[in-house]
Image (cartoon, rainbow, N blue to C red; front, side):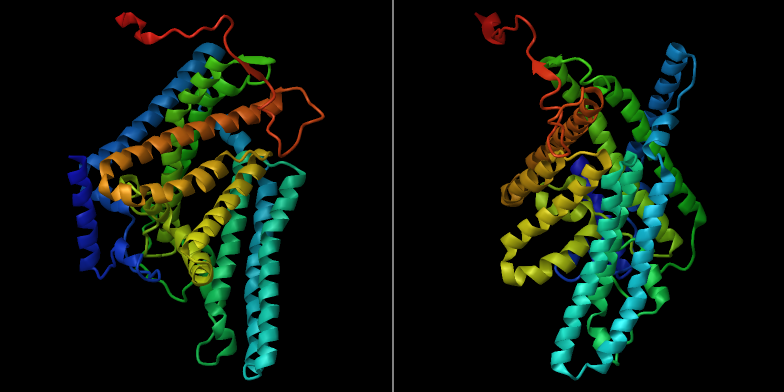
Length: 473
């Protein structure tokens, strides 16, 4: 039944796209990314399917239940009402410093445009002098690399010197990478135009629009909607706020009770750790789904609506796939389009597909690890291992088997999501609280996990193994 529903919805999505001159997602993979008017897939599915809408309502009910649980528990235990705002306040702490770092990066990104104008003015003067053009191109590449390094180095230097609250730090580090990818895309798109009089450079208005548009691939013009539906913008921002509150509840009700005391005692039983890890699986997956919906659907659609950006295919139906290669393409089409256009395609003809894929995965995994390391205040490459190592190994495993056994491998992928997110939520929490609760040591380091040595994980006293099959004898 679920397969029929998915195929029907996908067919309706493609049919609706074809009627409006919209290219299917499969055809997009065979050619450079074009921009055509289309809605996000979940927008279409929730309009067309009562079943998908019911799942959306289920998540809302879970949020309401968590809200009641938090309020009633704190009222009975502590005589006060807590709706999770304390966790949000702590997570977005020192917001002024975060805003300052963001503004500095924005200024650097804006400075790219006058630099591009100056570069183009000189480039057109020497366009017919081959040697001078080679030298000027090298100067342009060095200047672009310097700006990209500055966009990343300024926040990294500041955050490495003094830790910033988790959510504020995630925002700053994600934005520094976004601005870096934006100016790189604009530079590549305008490179040849800096030496030509036939195609003028984009105006500052076009560049400014691109800086805030929900895309990382530069075009002078994008398909635009005729009006702004402010009620839609408001609705999506309410969803963003609700999801932030949702994750606050998950942290307070599932993570803090399990791990907040981790490291206060010199020893902890292995069974307690294992049970805690399994207890993190469901909240980890819910947070994973909420994070996807918050950023790639609600946030992107809100900005797309405000900017009249008509192409809203920010993701595809990754939840139905049985191949990890398709999952990585479908999960975040915005970043995937940039990686394909500015890393994979330029390098693949020289390095080959396999080596280029490895390079792209490595760069992407390192970028994610930089965000997490700066945000948590320590280097603990759990995500790097899951995404950059295990995820890469699963590409060939599911390439053909996923096509032959789609149901089995879709089940396998969801099992990987559950286990992987459970490990992320537990291991990072263990390390975070071990660094807070364990006594200082001369071996303490940004790069060496504290939770490996404190507390000591031991088996239960007098533990023995009993064969459960003995009952049959």
